[in-house]
Length: 133
Image (cartoon, rainbow, N blue to C red; front, side, top):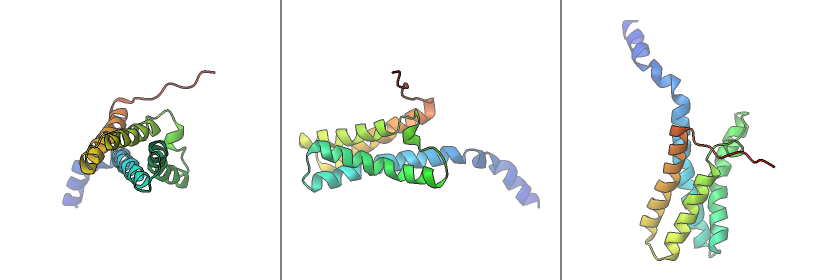
């Protein structure tokens, strides 16, 4: 009982921040799938713009499915910097590929920028301004 109480006392804060860990994992997945979707698009011989859209779609659809299954509004439909991070990572990968940067370096840089932007948005509550018609 004493060890369970000590573990609970010392580890309780970890349970409170589980949403934060989920959002960090989601940011990593967003960057990974933005780059991998773009790579597949370019590998199939598509135009760079099509490859970018494939990367963005690959990156955001997984999160949308997760949110719908959890009965939540998908992050991409909120004010979150989400699809923009995927778009930036995909476009950066296509741009670096076009100027001849090697695939591992281009993928690493695009992943870091995409994931970094999403993590910065999480850390500092960055969001896009709403549409004002």
